[in-house]
Image 1 (cartoon, rainbow, N blue to C red):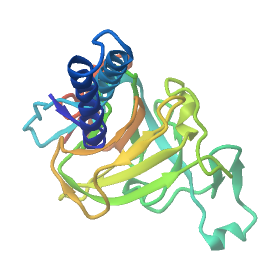
Image 2 (tube, rainbow, N blue to C red):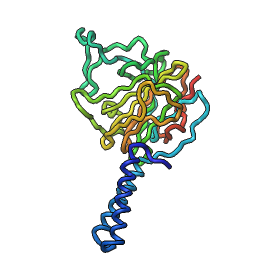
Image 3 (cartoon, helix red, strand yellow):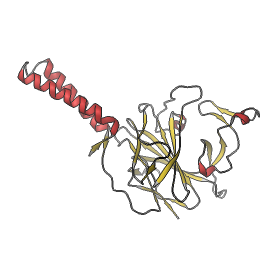
Image 4 (cartoon, rainbow, N blue to C red):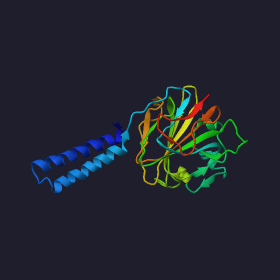
Length: 270
């Protein structure tokens, strides 16, 4: 059982302070006094930090056709979607065709020429049965409770080709809606695009929640990662969404199933 990188320093520091307090208590001060109480409080704090930054090793499937879960947690939903808009360019803003969402911000109401490249953040809507197109995607949303491991892992062996940090319209941070609700997709978020050697792109979005408000990247654009390799974390849980091209992909999970990052297969690719 390891400790995630952001928690290593604080856990060592607080643990050392706790040991120091106990040492002082039993060698200099009254063992039942204030110094002992401070040591107990610091020991509890160290345990809390270690628990919420725990980072266990995982068995990574060897089948190259599998797309593994980027996060621990419960599957909120599995849906087939289609792009209906994208972030506008400066030229498109001058056309007067911009549509504005109170939290998501401005959209140009036209899908990009290649939605499956995930080059920019897009607006997606569910696809009705019988209306499927090759440019659709499957999205799986995973809710991470405060008790889940908070480290995210790479879904496929790939290179990071894009990363984007977004907040609500006009906000420096937030919003921070409850992560277990679908509306939390407008929360503060970090969108990462992974591209495999055969050119398949997969989008993973780390979404902050009502309590979890810190998204910490371990990897950045141009980094090459193996399937199941750690690439970031969200402190205290929250939500992670993954989108893969629907053409040639078969979802392997359904709503309410519990998944493990790097271990549980979410899709099988042809």
